[in-house]
Length: 449
Image 1 (tube, rainbow, N blue to C red):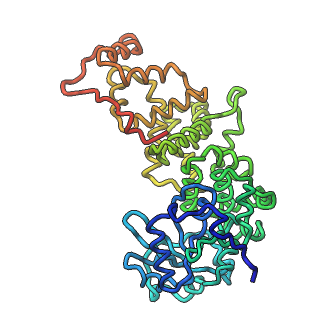
Image 2 (image 1 turned 90 degrees about the horizontal axis):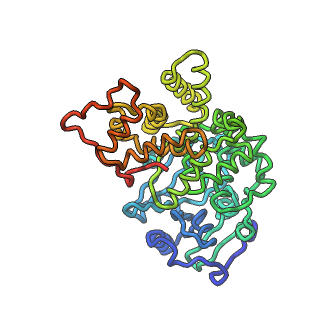
Image 3 (image 1 turned 135 degrees about the horizontal axis):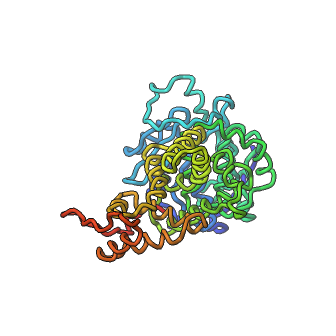
């Protein structure tokens, strides 16, 4: 057994005042019951860096059934690997038993995530039980993905335990995979995305050997189930560091295996200028997240897939299809192709397509059309998307100026604006039906960057 490095309390920055009160309750109850009781993973890493952890994970030598007996508010989840969730209102403290590297590495390294359903001993078939291989603390550390995520905080003496020189890598700002990089990525290709995500989040450099297999093994990402990839993409781009993540993904040749149509579109320049809508959208997403404003996957995917839709629309128009039918057909084809790689739930794909359809409808402002668009629940998201198109040099700024002014103008000014853009012989003078009103747009209701 390797002798771990023990960092005593006086040599690290972790204070119990920075740890969730509920996590401390879990730690102390496990300790008082005679079990090992430690924080592990990202929470220890972030505490060592002086950051506020998003959640707290606990590890112990107690088995899931023993853990559940200690907490009336606990339930066992998972089938392939069983964990215990201890719930305190809206906060969940996850408790895991030390795990060893699975005996059957082919089966255990499957990228399919276990369903999080409560189970009992009798519910678990013998062949699945075999994968709940419990081990020692050292085995548990070596099984983890990156050295900086394999640090343990022991509640017994408040020390930090380090088997893999994770504390050294923290000080150096290095992200290094544990074990042979190629083997670890073949076990689970998503580890390559995790490496990029942590590097962007922490501002770390990916160690040379850790990054070396990326380009060669990147095609393995296409073997990951699209449903799992959907969750991973949200982690990549909805963490507040989407732009840095995007740049790293492209740098290492990973992005093309997530959004191949987008990558192909971005490799073409638009009239000699690079396409910038996606980076601008990601920068705006980061700004909103860092300001604690809501974001939606619909806007993210609308931005990611807009360039492929534009290119496909142009092809269809060149073959004689009108612009509106071409846009619809292009959206269908692009979305169908993208779903081969990443699932997009209908609750997001439908508003995404509406955001796209609005871009053509913004041109139609005569009569009552401008009022109808303004009252539509997708108006704000589509308007924000139009702003991005203008910022990237794709759309006419006069159009956004018109819609920006129209949102705040009085009714008399709005009618004058509509009359100015209505062709001769149009119906801009038509009076609104009695009872029709023009509700103000509440900018605070926007849920998109």
